[in-house]
Image 1 (cartoon, rainbow, N blue to C red):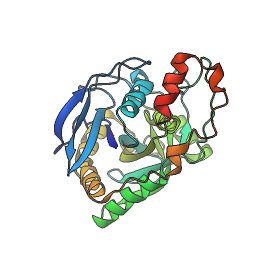
Image 2: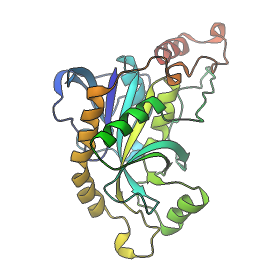
Image 3: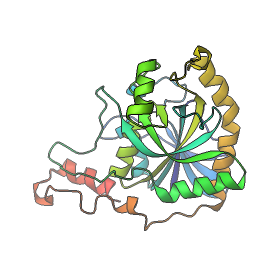
Length: 282
């Protein structure tokens, strides 16, 4: 089952024939919005707007645990996310698409970053946090449409909501060797791995953040909204092409991330921990 998580500017999927809306209470609270389930190009697809239906949630206010848990409880095994990103590299021009292959966690706030704890100990591998199978399918779809897409780029996640300083932008570009910067993919990507969900982000570059010397190139909300809007049609066409040809791969390693990750014996787990693990392990 495939789910789409919409970022800035994506609060619905055009062409999704909605059949049901799921209002879900999770052990972690409410998701960002009701999850829409419907038919898209003949396939069952779920949709969740990351920031809420009216973009009322800051990146730090998104309940990432509830979002991922709710999707997994509905049977979702694959997630394609959309995110507005700043480019830290000259070759990734505003308007280009990019696949996030690696993540650099630069979050300093108190976001809940794991499903584990409270008597349930597990350590999943995130050496390769993005699903290669999904990434290959998305890149192939973009290439078929002759849409520029940059593969296997490193995404730095910052707290927000403020836009970054030039010093921070240069640090992420040079010291951390990152290619993209955004505010939402951590802990989303890592929670998806803990839930054994294949996960991949399509980043839509809206600006060059603020590492360049030319002040006119520094990121602003106006730039983000205008350039992002111009690129949405391109991103959605790639999604459509991807869904038309994509086949799920249940043998993907993402789907067995918990196989040797849980250290707490079942006999020591509370009933709540057992129920949580049962959902994550599906």
